[in-house]
Image 1 (cartoon, rainbow, N blue to C red):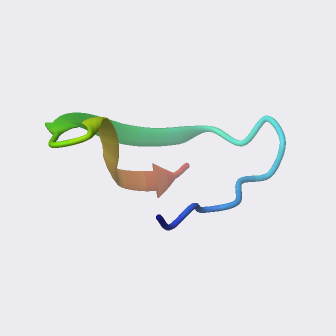
Image 2 (image 1 turned 135 degrees about the horizontal axis):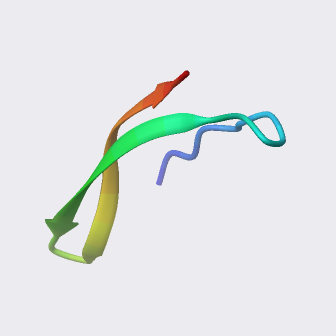
Length: 31
């Protein structure tokens, strides 16, 4: 699994899609 490190209190936009292993965040964009 690939995890993106975010700064504390950083705002992000993302979409949640249902994947084979449960919900997954996709299209993550830092604001």
